[in-house]
Length: 136
Image (cartoon, rainbow, N blue to C red):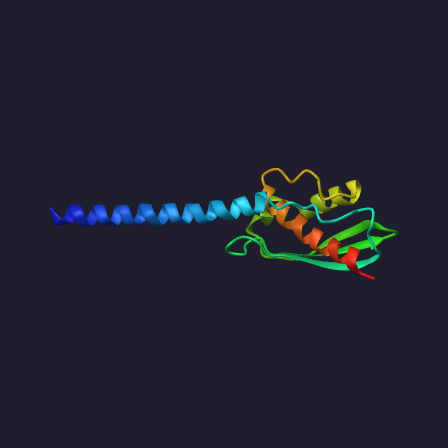
């Protein structure tokens, strides 16, 4: 009888731990999905090379750094400098960066199957471009 009680307590403990973990992971996903990406006026970019950094999620899985080149008031190039994102194997950030350059906007389609990772990369680009607007 006590064996059943011990087993029940263990199963209940595992269920509670699983629920807590799932809840935390869902919070991280919600954070990534809700990144606004609306702080940059693409009509007011100053030429230069700017470093962008984003480190999101509770485990900072989506940490990335990029370098954004603005020439003639337009985004001319974006390079990934570093990434500790496990979602990297699902996407090519160059494809995402090319969309930003072509559209001159951060409101671009994300990479299918890597939406959260795409949003993290776009946030780093935005963080770089915000500097270009405050650069005197």
